[in-house]
Each structure stands twice: as C-alpha cells, then as structure tokens.
Image (cartoon, rainbow, N blue to C red; front, side, top):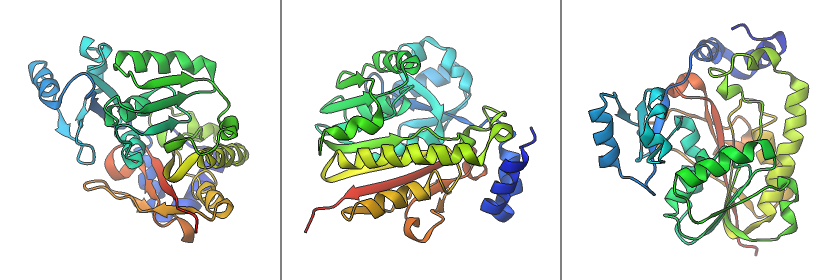
Length: 299
C-alpha cells in the first residue's frame, strides 16, 4: 500500500517524525474489540462464552465492558443475538466521552451503522429518549438491524438531513456528531484511502462537518454536551471544526478528556489542546479525533 503524493505530503507535514510509524500502522488491520451489550448480557456471561470457545481475550482498559478479541467472534450466534458488538476499540470513545445517562434526551446525529447508538443506549440503560438519525437511506437498514438485535427500546430512528435538525431548538441533553469524514483512521481496513485522498475533498467535508456540528450545538439544552468526533487525521476536519463552533458560540466550552491506559495526544491548535487525537500506531486501533464541548449557562 503506497499513499498518493498529496496524502504523503500533507501527512509528513502534519505528523513530522511520527509519519513513518503512522504509515507502518496503516498497513495492518487494527485489533478489534468486543463490547458486551449490557442490555442483553453481562461481562461474566460473555467471558464464559469466550472461555468455552477458546477465544483469547483481554480487557480494553478504557472501557469497562470491552475486550480485545479476534474479529471472527462476529460469526457466532451470540453476536447475531446481540449479546455483544464487534467494533474498533477507538470507536468506543465517542460514546464514553458523551457520558449519556438514564432518563436523558440524546441525539446521535450520524448514526449508521449503529455501533455508537447501541453503546449509548446501553449506557442509558434503555431509559430516556435516544434519537438515531441517518440521512443515507442505504445505511438505514444496518442501523435498524443493529438497534433491533441489541434490544434497544428507548430509540427512534429518523432519516433527515443533519444540517436541518437545527430547526428544533434546545431539545437534547447530549448530542453525538460522529461526522462523515475522509476515513484516514480506517486505512488498515481500506487500503484505497491513502491513494484516493485529496485535499479538495477534505475541504468539502470540512464545510459539511462545520454545518453539522453547528446545527447540533444549537439543539443542545443549556448545560448540554456535544461530542464531535471523526475517524480521520486532517486539521481541517478536526480542530478547525471545533474552532468554528467555539467562534460561533460564546457559550461553548471545550472540556478535557483523558482515559487511563489510552495513549493519545492533544489537539494541534492553541484553542483545541483539550481535544483528543489518537493515531493508529498508539494503541493498535484505528485513528480518532474527539472533542467534548459544553453549552454553558448564559450570564
């Protein structure tokens, strides 16, 4: 897998001495995590299943309900029944950073295929209101399937343009915007990404991401929390989107996030140091960017 010239030039400048380690990690598929779906099972039951099927596993330190496993566990009936969910371990973090609680109103704005929606529902203990939105009708089927197999009962699935969700003001306690992006963090899964990457596409995505995040922030209640995340690397899709929210909203404040056992780095601009960047070679996962933003009370 050789990256295109535009990709290489951008990322060498972005990552400096980390570029070669980053490039090496992109040539391998990241480790997978098994997240216990606490709506249907508990850790003891899933550990017993793993032992009985001679599947090696180890705890994911930053998520109490997750284990490192071989991805082949997705072929077992227990997976189809929704007792657990297989996903990249870094993709556990946006839902954890959101800290959804039972009884709250929560929006997952870009929800398909449903890994984060089902995680949020479990953290909410199936209590409160969870809206899972997906604009792309081709992806709705996977979202509905995962919501159903995981026993989620507090969610409604909608299919709307996420940018237009801001017509309803101050509705939600928590909102997750896991935005469409250039997917560089998923390169170990799709080797075509570095060859097809273009800065022009990054700029187009950045424009969409800013509109999605801004619309979502306007839907937050006072003291509500927005988590903005992507599985990519560019400053334009990450730090600049967060800076856009902060510049537009005087009541927006970034909150620091950090988790035991997880290697990460700070945001790359002065105003985004409290954001989290994860590169694939840090933890054997995909790459991720996560920002937690609170809507503060107005003076």
